[in-house]
Amino acid sequence: MKLYSLSILHKGATKSHLLKAAYDLSSFMVFLFIFLSDYLCHVYVRNDNLSAVVIADTEYPQRVCFTLLDKVLDEFSRQVDSINWPSGNPETINYKALDIHLAKYQNPKEADAMTKVQAELDETKIILHNTMESLLERGEKLDDLVAKSEHLGNQSKAFYKTARKQNSCCEIM
Figure (tube, rainbow, N blue to C red):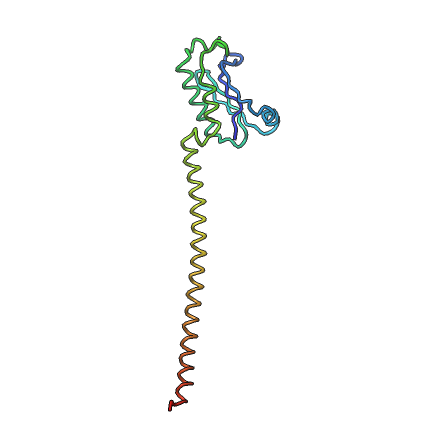
């Protein structure tokens, strides 16, 4: 799971323009490969014409992408005056948190509480299934032991009866 790009744009009357962007090009060759094949582009446009785009691989959770986009747009709108949006560009807009958010959200389990809880639930579910399987195996083994002990008990009774019969025909002198 990987995020490759996080951008903030302003939607004008005829076209949109970039206000700020952050990229993770640490795996540039992989980025080129994924850019040509398996990636998803998540876009969120608000009523105030502010929009955000994140490019992620197909494994990255969609809900986490939109949580990130919503958080970034809220923070950006609080820190950058809306008067600067229509004429702004990456050099003039003073918003430094985009790189921080891109780095933080590389691991959705650490960045998003719901994803972390879901991962923990999945791990607990696997452990529970393994425990149930081992309990069922133990139950089968216990059933086998009970059956064997019953069989052994029956054999010992039969041996006792046979030994008693054998001993009753002989008298000790």
